[in-house]
Length: 169
Image (tube, rainbow, N blue to C red; front, side, top):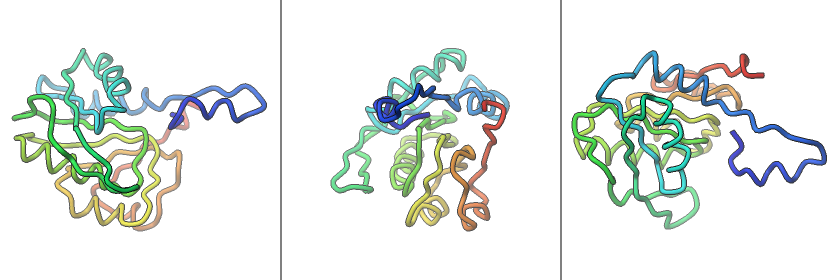
């Protein structure tokens, strides 16, 4: 998953954007598929991605986190758009950096009545306070791929699970 499609233009050779969604969707199907499943976009910019994945999950319902970024790497959740009460929320994003957005999104979802909050992110950048943010959050689990090796403290974190994308390559 390229963070921005424009990245393809920086290469002098053809580049294929390989999506991790088959691996991530397979895991969602095995572990979380139920009538209570609700796909969540962590921001307005991710709605197209989240909606595409929701359609592949039996056209699951969608919620959106409305957030603002007062400064780089700092997110403030404003409110949840959609009914999440008693739902198993699956946040879909392309990358997780400091995990500030995930921490705030999970908090907002649980405060709005979500039963469970799990996040699926392709690229685990996990910089700075990311592991601490995950450990101190109400996020039930963060599922990432192996596109970036995990730091030792991330490997030890019981709330982080890593999936291999080797089958896609």
